[in-house]
Length: 204
Image 1: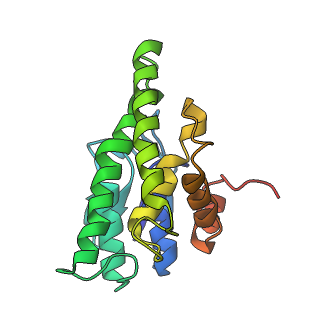
Image 2 (image 1 turned 90 degrees about the horizontal axis):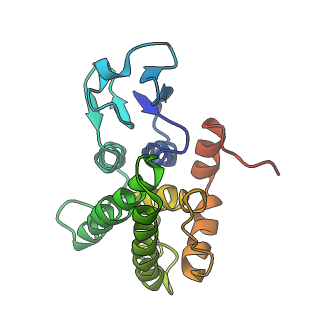
């Protein structure tokens, strides 16, 4: 399968899950400004939405939307640590986080990357994100990961989205539990490999 991605974008979350599961895959970089793949193809022809990630299977079937791609990868790999079994309450808790990260965090960051949004509006989004992350910080107290001691697809998603904060003026440095979470996830081999593959690994 192929994962179409842009370095540091939300596509990094399913990228991490691919590496967590050991699933064979190929990375295909997308220039989101030009909407061209690294081979020069028109990305809109593959994904009319024009966004990453996109997962293309061997038979040409494609799947978009990061949280759904992560769910597909985890289930295909039979990794119930990453996403618990169908019908279990633990599964719904992971999906609850996936939904929160998608709707409340991810989409609150989006305007901060838009040059058309004025400074006053961006300040409001920064303030709202600060409040939301204080709540996330409270939920991480006493926990290694969002739902307990086990790393799941939701943790990969939170790690990637939260990594955008310093670049857009969202100061989370005072949130000790969030910072500990980020440091913990950053030490995972899958995360290190994904960052290196995307050209984002920090020099030692």
